Image (cartoon, rainbow, N blue to C red; front, side):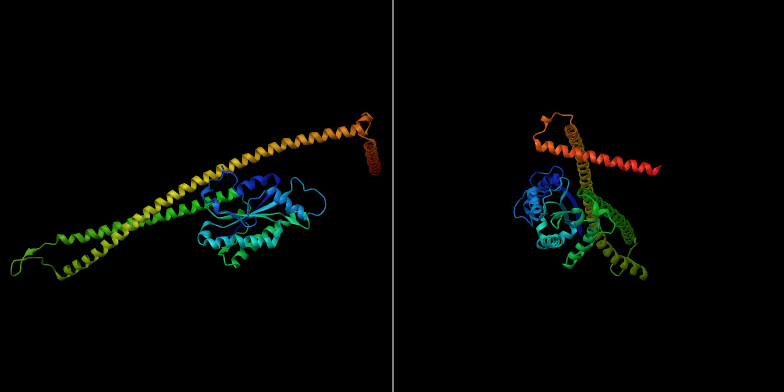
Length: 389
């Protein structure tokens, strides 16, 4: 039985444009060799009738429901993207209408659970080896963006139980993934690599079984040849001329004659079985060759995925370094601004540095509050020292 696969990834603002390019096939992918551009026209979106701007669409969903005036944090998770799929054998067993119904029912279930208004996109890819859907859910609840509360650990565990059960109830032959398995937490590339490794292992086992079967058939052929050699000994039976008109006849004991008859019948049967076994042997050889070719192809795909994974990790590392420098620059700028403001407040700068009286008055209030806070800390410190004595 096939597994229901439902994986989630958290997407922040900086990732939306790249996800948009991938999901809507806006640029040619250089890292995913599994995309067949000739089939990309078969892709569809269950939420949007045409291509959209992910940033604009998601911000519209947030602003439409948001209460209060507080701005969304720049590092907030804006959308939780689920990849809904199963294995290739599952989809091969379904008619095209049933494949589409699978994704439609999955989308409807998520819409009812997390709100139709929070569905940003539901893009189905039919141009890769296994059909799958990228479903974007904006984690809005009670007028606030709160991904940690909407998709906490308990909810994700419940989802892994409820989703396969719901799809089974609709007639799809699926089961839940293994409990405690790391399959639920793998990235897309790791999942593909893991699936390929499992398929390679399966093919290697099939090749081993075929080779074992081939060895058995060869052994059986050897036995048949020995049996045929035994039948050929009939030609060695001595004969002599005899009878009324001098015909050439063979004089045999009755038991020998019956044995020859049995061997003759067996010979015909063995020849037929021999021909059948030879055909099976040729078919097994062809199947073995095909399996080895598939295994080699999967090995190449596995290498491609590993290369892609290394490239993505390297890119991520470079991005971290870039943002790390930017954070340092920002912190340095804040420090300079803070030093400048404090200098103004403490009177180390001329009053002309203040824009107006209001700014000057605000500076005085801030400085007074700062002094009071320092005095309060000093009082507490003296009190604590007195208690220690």
